[in-house]
Length: 293
Image 1 (spheres, rainbow, N blue to C red):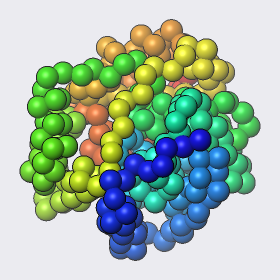
Image 2: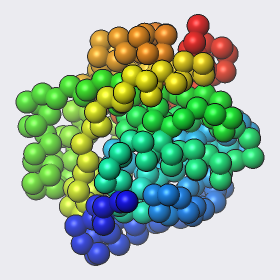
Image 3: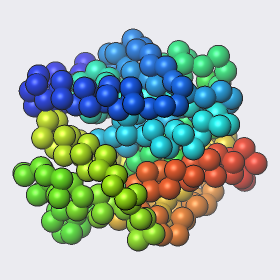
């Protein structure tokens, strides 16, 4: 069972969905959009490229329409399948699972993987998307995981500074407040592209028209340990304010039997800060550098 809607009004839902559709229409990379029926309701996936399948799961408040530069970096060598999470702003169903949320999302991942590709896919999850990937049950549909700034392994580090940028963004959503939040979430090495207002525009829409979700609690150790026999790469930024290497490294060693890749100067928005990050991590996974070792 899911909650009725994350949106504050029907008009707000239309604004967010129209923004997503407009951005996808403007994307020059050949792609197709599909609507899947799943246990969590309708799920929109955007598919581009050819090659080994990569199922890309975004973080909290992000969706396929915000990942186009990330997808472009993967498309030359992969079939990229970007899935909007139900219960997050985007084009999928607006309700979140009411009970057993992460277990429900885990079942959803397997459902989606079974519908989008003829062969196994590598699941690439960022933040919330990483926790959703870990919540899935390993099987023949998934041949590996790449987890970036992963939720689900430890509690997020919450600070007064985070409150100082989050409250203004929620209470009085403006481009300026969205930019301040995005700066807080990005690393010192990140240099925003000149004139790129997309991230701030999107985050302003999200704050105005949807109810954001909190970071999930750590998954049970028994759930994470199910992935011990599957190739996994875990990476986080040295500047990640939520899941820094010191916070993620212990659970990765204890539950997955490997080491975390610490990316210098990267913040919490790693795939958005540097679109070349994911191709490099997928290369590491396929070169045999994923856990177990």
